[in-house]
Image (tube, rainbow, N blue to C red; front, side):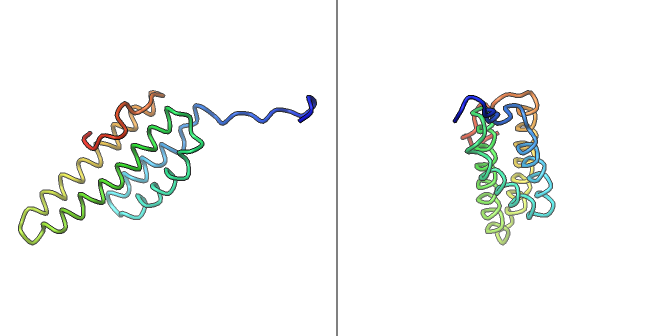
Length: 120
């Protein structure tokens, strides 16, 4: 590369658009399910190029999705014995709370402190 060529700009360190989009898609997914899958694809596709603080949000989002699926399957399996509705309701609240907390850390420009935890 010669000195006359412009350098390639680094990725935007403060562009929060994609992780905000993933949280929004997850929240919409609480009503329809499909948008959460789209959010998962965006999170997987974006995490490698993200700065470390933002990558923590993608890790958190990916884990949130898969745990949500696991808890939802458990809730569906428990519907015949009468506690499935409670499990599904708790799972819905858990997912909403994780998305809201993640958004609050993201909008402050901070890494999610414990992205690998399964509790809020």
